[in-house]
Image (cartoon, rainbow, N blue to C red; front, side, top):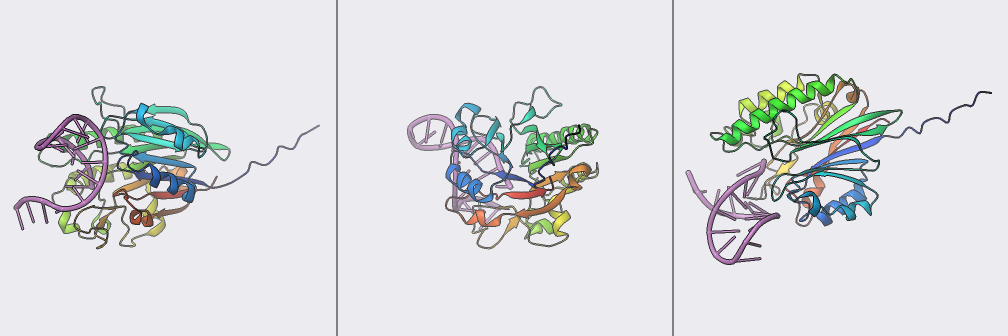
Length: 273
DNA sequence: ATGACATATGAGATATGA
């Protein structure tokens, strides 16, 4: 006798990315945002602490699984998830000598399949006449190589994080002010395009088109938030299989108005599950 | 042109960020 399988419960999955600028300094903001936004997966960057110091219990208490790739004082990335993570990879492949904690990746169940999600903290690269810029460009080359390898899996894939790249003049209030900055240098923009051109979709642009004024970062200085002097540098790049599932993408700019905010705000997408 | 602001480290001033 045939048993009719129960239909899989189809529900959208919310995947977010947020550079918190120190998870310890931002713990209260992060917890209240999670309670409000209820993402299924949250990619965090700039933890500024080692794995042992990450306040994992506070997130477990909210029902999140926690995986981290931390570092003392600088960098550090994490993924919080309603479901347990599998296939966890810590560190971007391609340079065994790179000690900076800027990449973590894991796989989660989605509908009848899976989605692979990476939390990325791409190097800033300033000043651009130093080895910091060289490191940024090299890191982007490594990211492109790894992204290409992941695309070959032909599965839903979301590369989410702080890319430290302003893709086009549309992504800055005052693009002329960023001329020569590592975030807007032609080399940085070209390497970002190289990754897009592998076959990725910029989720926010896919949903919002050429709408101006979409920013994810406002400097703490000179009243940048009050003047809306922002830039869009936090991105979610989708593989073709993830883009097929894209239902929504938005920037949660109200988070920038919190008490003691991060200088970045969360960006959230919804994928059909 | 510079600094402005925030965070970590570690106890004053410096490094980093974007």
